[in-house]
Length: 411
Image (cartoon, rainbow, N blue to C red; front, side, top):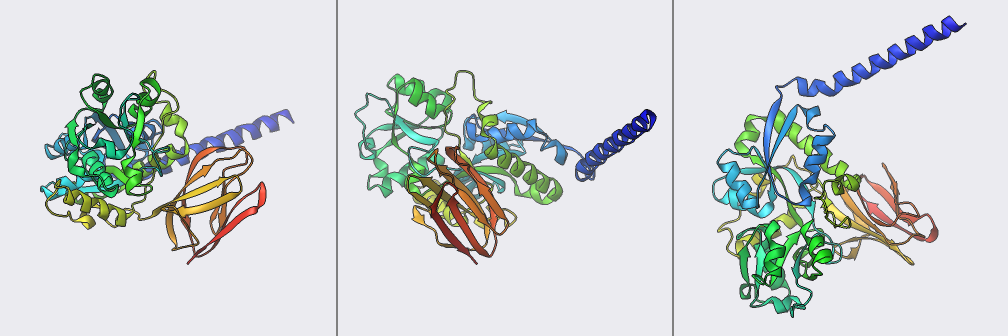
């Protein structure tokens, strides 16, 4: 009897080993069919870029036959310069520097979208800060003041001026000074500038350590979930290396989606001493092309570019289009919104749901064809889901309160 058990155990163990080896072979088949490559990625010293590190850690790039070599630069404009000089194969940068590059004969092409901003100053990860003792209380008070941005003719300049214009403040009344993000807090503390435009982790450092205040969130002023940037390559390289380009997009999208679902792994990469409550960005692999066109028009309006870029070439059809929706539950209300307005119908397609669960007594659930997700009753905070909605009816509700239920018609 015991010999039969031992023999059977050995067979089961051998079968398991064969299964593991088969899985490994399957995982490396796609990468093995082409030559392994090393790509230099020029990135920025901000929390938004952490999915790249998380993806490297989990082998998402190795699985695609890609080895990543990182180099960190101060601004998107520096990233463009590095790519133009062939010092980087891939650039992590804002859409504005990408547009500048294309209009100046550097044919950048998006390989993966990365992040969008929040819905208000309270949940946004990139805002304008002033000292706690500053007399600047409103966006109108920024007129005549000096604001630090990480680069002139970049994302910050366009968004700040566009937001001020929307708020009826003269966008030409401010003075912008270029400083690295790493130097901005000390510059404001020393009185060199009146305000700073900073992303995380510098935003929460200013709020928690320096007792700074938020005076404006340019992104949410322009629109909820405003697109910021992503990863780009040279268009000629993409044409010459279609398989590697596709593999790179696959690895980047996997990294972004995984990091969005596991935010603690991004927080673990923060510099020592950084407050743990930083506001992580909303990572989304989807592109809202209509909003990007608005950004391009702002970029031209404020003289950063002289002509609109070829948007179809910058963001090829292989990049998935989609909208970011806001789900909210708390108290006696539950809703799905787009730009602050309740949604009752949608077209089939890809969506990113950003759910704000504000109650320990409620949950936010979404159920319909191919989708069954919930935050859970005890869960509180922000949760992000990447979903594909098909033709049919979707119900969103709280499992703890039957009256909190509504539907969205898709089709």
